[in-house]
Amino acid sequence: MPLIGMNGDTEGLSFHIDGVRRARFLYPVPAKPCGLSPGSNISDRFEESKALVDEAIFNLQRFEDSLDTFNEKTKPFELRQQFDASDNCWTYRLVTKERFPKQLEAIAKSVVHNLRAALDLMVAALIRGGGKVVSKRAGFPISKSKAAFEKELGSKLENVPDPVVRFIRRLKPYEGGSQALWALAQLDNLGKHNQLPPVAVAGVAVAVRTAMPGVFVAPDGSICLGGGPPGSTPFGHDHGYLIPEGTSPIRIENDDVELYRMDASIREVVTDVTLNAAFVTIGPASLTRNQPLYEVFTYLIHLVQRILNSVERCT
Image (cartoon, rainbow, N blue to C red):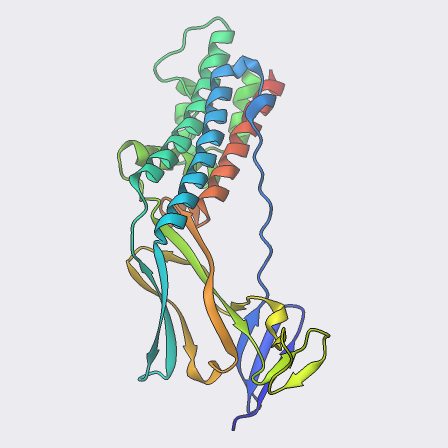
């Protein structure tokens, strides 16, 4: 009978079998709150941009509501386990049973396009406010390089007040400068040409619940061996679900993907394996770095709001 030991620290729990550490599970990092507020504080001078930002916020919430409804009704993912005798491991695979509806992709594209257009309309409002005609090339410059940005700056921002031009230059809206603005422009371009990877790409991580075999905690807090009175829980369950060390969210681009491989020797201390998070992302990883779509879009909305407010203060 193997001797199993468990010890914990501020980061997680470690399990030893016959004196050898065989597994470590980390406490999950709490999610940071990320709230959105309407663009009501944006100057009426940029009325059209303000309307597009508010529309982006509305559509992002619509996306979240539609996604929740779809997940609840269809249960599109299934976590399956299988024993691999050749490797003496239990494997856990995520099987996609149904793709996300195209409606979600269309809503996501509208959020991106509204935010990109809000910046262009801001430039147009500044030009018209100076009594000038808006040219076909006028718009908020986001370029593929610093050199391209400097080359386009004159035509894109012709008749725009100098303080605003200096502010936009400080933003570095080009690849290698502002990653967020570059991602916004590229996502918008991909969406226009129907090349935006579908929002049916999910980032998934696993979580496990662990316990010491045969050890229970009674309702009164006492430790019981081999069992316990009604209401007792396995010793270790009070830590909740933990994240296996060395694992990270996986980009799901196939219908059947292996998420986690667990040595059979620790199966006795792992009482449950579940999905810790199944979130939707969008676009190439080089642009959005596999971050959840909601967080990406929330950041972009805040960024556009800050730019509009900063430009108002410039003039």
